[in-house]
Figure 1 (spheres, helix red, strand yellow):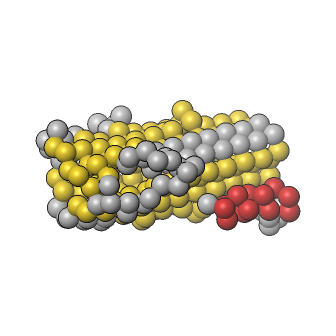
Figure 2 (cartoon, helix red, strand yellow):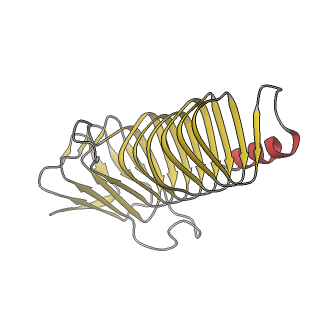
Figure 3 (cartoon, one colour):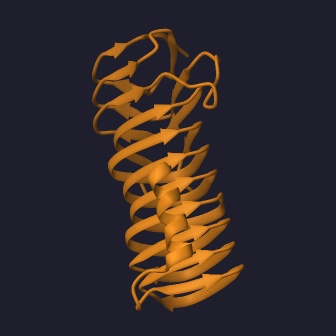
Length: 220
């Protein structure tokens, strides 16, 4: 995630190409179609379309579509309905109904209705909840790599594998790593705990099609 912080810092100091839209200070934008958007400050975005987006500060969005890369250094809170290309976050991520092609997050993630068509890499706790939209499949992931003490997946389809990495002192500390699979979750690939002493809590309707290694399975 360090490269994304460097990218944001360089963007703020040097600027980008002439067509980039630069904003300094807190911003509230509604109903606009933009190109390369760089915001140094908090942002509240509603019904916004953009090619790229960089925010150095808190972000709240409602119906936001970014076709290419999004870099956020700061928390995302109280947000809903986001469609992204590559989504890179340093900070807390709290939202509903989010779709992206790739996810890299350093910070806690809590989303109701998350679809990631590519790989998801997370350093921080993860909670995926059932979507608030009854017409949408709750959560879909391709492959998940995560370093966290607490992971909870509800009504989630994982097309590939889950790898739970060893936690560092700043991510989870010495806590035992627990992966909770809830609701109608299906994992089609393998589940691996790198540290070798994890716990997997599996509720009744959960399906695991691949092997589980490095963890004790507890059926609830």
